[in-house]
Image (cartoon, rainbow, N blue to C red; front, side, top):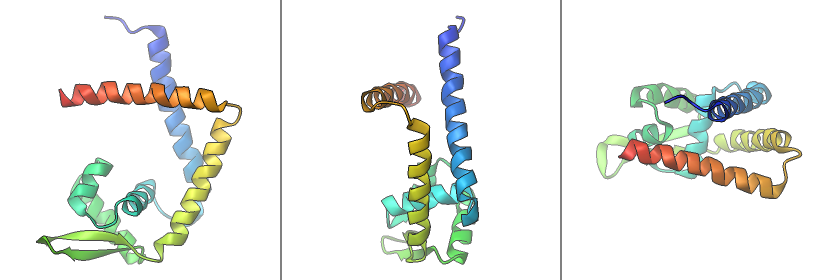
Amino acid sequence: MPIADEDRELAFALSDAALVLRRAFNARARHLRLTQAQYRTLIYLNRMPGITQSELAGHLEIKPITLTRQLDQLAGNQMIERRVNPDDRRSFRLYLTANAEPVLKEIRAIGAQVLRKSTAGISAPDKKRLIRMLQGIKKSLTEDENA
């Protein structure tokens, strides 16, 4: 079945917008000397303190070995700490240190700046409509994955 032109355009617009958002953020955050993967790791750890490495890898949709390298670098910068998991001594629970807070504050400020710029001129009702539509796309695709 052929793809409708508007569906193709929508797919490219979504992909392009996500790419440009990431680039804009990365350009403004370059001075932090962290990778995008490390930013995401810090943000997830801020939301879920005490998560295990395997759980975090699942949320980030990466392999645990890939995450290990990121965590090693963040631990080397004293932004995270690994604590023995009392429920399973073979694994660790991950926590942010006080050194991560200024970085997270900067990440939040840069994110807010990029979002303000990217949504300038879009009304609040249009933003809500767009959010609902994007959530619908995500839900449809997630249902396919789980079927």
